Length: 219
Image (cartoon, rainbow, N blue to C red; front, top):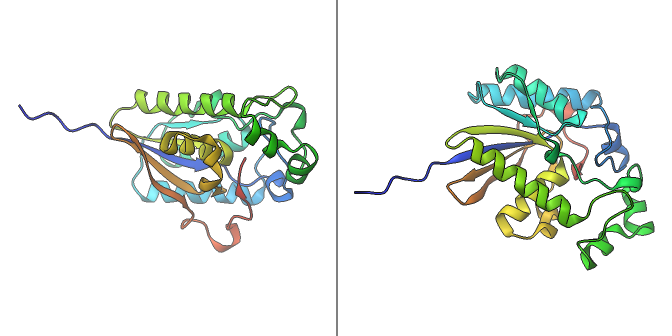
């Protein structure tokens, strides 16, 4: 008897739309912040792209932070997905008391990136370590894929979260997340067949000129 072919599951990964903090280079992390006007336009454009490509009734998951959940709601409404499923583990890297600082302050004053490179278990006060962050992302991505064998699922999260998940699942090394930076409301795609593979990254063809992303990176 010929063995059956593996069932392929696909995750369509969407980084949320732009926020004011993205523009100013401020770390939002697990703090809540709304989409700005450009971010709302971006969300409608990615929703239109997915609808035009025939995604209808697909399950939509999102981080509970409003910048991600609002983006997901725009998509779900356009593709007739029903209620968005909120997953706390899809939230961005939680830096505790250091949230609200600029990227420059985190890099130079707090030396966050250097500390994490030396010790991935380093934990900012009140926050989580890089190891904890990567572990929960791998867990939730695998859980979502396992719940929907053979389906295509839309997942709306954050730049750093998606990039870290890809780095862990494809390379087994969360520190390589900078290789997978993406723009606001870009589309990326992973398949499980059964091994996870990256099919596309940072597709922004659906964004009009006035909504082109100004921020490529985390959060």
